[in-house]
Image (cartoon, rainbow, N blue to C red):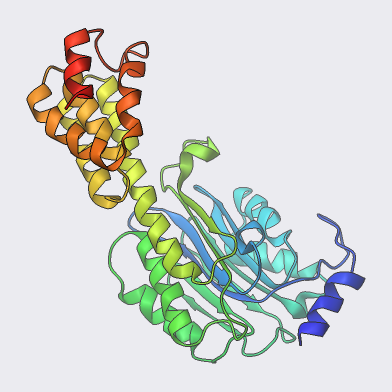
Length: 324
């Protein structure tokens, strides 16, 4: 099988946005979903293929989400989103693209639009075990699996998990892996989740955009990165509150950031800086002490914060912080 797949890459030229077959054999499993409560749209995927996130997941806030896999024709992603943005339902968009694809028998695609309409296609020549399930507002699809139970396991995990869309998507991936996942093993993963309240500015609409390119345990590594991403979301919100003069609100966010990512001493460092800036040095000093014990280099950062306006130009204050 490995020789067959390798040959497919060598002998078939790749042309983007053209009629010729794009034969990138990204056998994998994925989930495409719309969260009815929040309007969020997302795709999560795992594969024994390098950098699966560069090919499979496509999402646009307020429009839809697409996973294109098996012998990937990447065009299903951007072109599917363009059609849905023009008013096509997910089903209409997928049918339109399948009708002009002479090699639809080797494609596997899942789509959902911003209204929650979901549809999937598994070509008859996708490598077994291959199949999909379309649920309310989501699709799960898999090919080259170790077990035919993978799609049902993903469906059950997604539907039974509570909480944020990102957590439900990850539950589906974990369930797939529990049933054996990709018969070749594990290598890369990706998750892309967009807000349900689009701004029209793509980077602002991204809630999570994380990729594991090559890792022996991509799903658990992805879970770790989601935790870290949440920490920095709170840290960034804290910075915004601080700019607005809402110090207590900023401190709450900084504390949450440190809880999500306790391994990183820099996060409590900024909490201490915020306290020192508003003349709450007694609260700040114990935090600085703990931070400097773990990351001595941050002690040297303190005076550099004065020109940036993050600490007052007060020699006694700076001395008391650096010498603690």
